[in-house]
Image 1 (cartoon, rainbow, N blue to C red):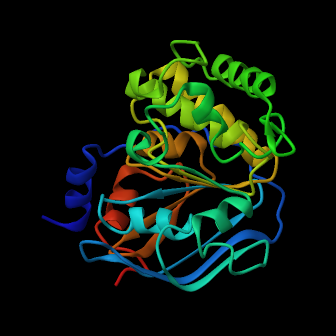
Image 2: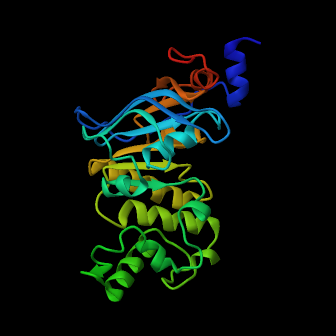
Length: 279
């Protein structure tokens, strides 16, 4: 079987899917720069010299067969694992040393498993929506909790993202997986100051069509406000719909990049390591 046939078999199709990417941002310097990024995976693998850039207002999709460094890329960008190489945000380094430093520098994170990695399940929806922003208005007045402000912000986010049940006092652990995902998206994308970098891993997993559209609108809105947005997804249709470029990870490196209108065969070849930069 040749490379083209194998790529088609991996992707399950041999035709291009029409794309509808967001409008391209105006040219400018990169907001995020990753150069020769290396991060060891817990089970081997990890990142082995990945390099990429994302401009202000740009949405970069990251595709690849699961286990080729996607998890480590997310963790490195969010200060969750030690890494080597160069990571610059607005030209500055050192912001990714810890999760707190990354958060304080304007990085928001939507993990692929919100139940385990983004929510405190015994707490209410209201309390979870304040996590990370709880020291700032409207959640607090100086050192004191502003309960009315926190309740009002929670109600606003719950309504905007259609979290069900629409009760700020509902326990997060009692929500469905899709509604837990909405809760995290609401907090990260619209719960605090405008982010500089959005790292979204499998963001629409578990969401219905209407919720997916709302999420995509929020990601586009963050980009329009100037954020660099990285979407790591196994759903190529999702990446085609919202991204300006798609980069493909293979064995911890960027095997190549493609336009969102690229065919399944082109992306499949990159996912199999048939790219200019694959090891």
